Length: 155
Image 1: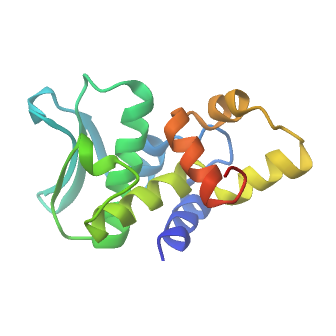
Image 2: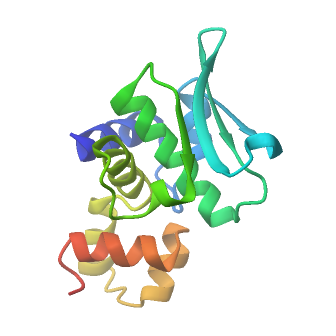
């Protein structure tokens, strides 16, 4: 479900270039993306204002982390539409007890690191450097390692 939802969003709104830009995808889907320094301890949230979805990210969060936060909040939008989510750093960790947070994390991983793109880069282009892949996808080491483990490329 999460993989298909992310792939659907990619097929509808992604320009095909790496790294995937989740803010551009969100805006193309009609979702505002804003920086909000008043989030307190939260790193991001999705809420509805006047019937429109808005993703807010904390500006003190690193650029790579902001990308994941936006993708994670898009996951909430696609998978749990209508609900308001405020996410703290711990909810973005790979191991999550809350099923909705785990689903949003898996959605974010597939949006930022599409499985088919990993296969093309590794199989066809023979790119095996983790650093190069991390840079191409614009993600943290942690996100890339988790995704590659899920795909069976790392133990």
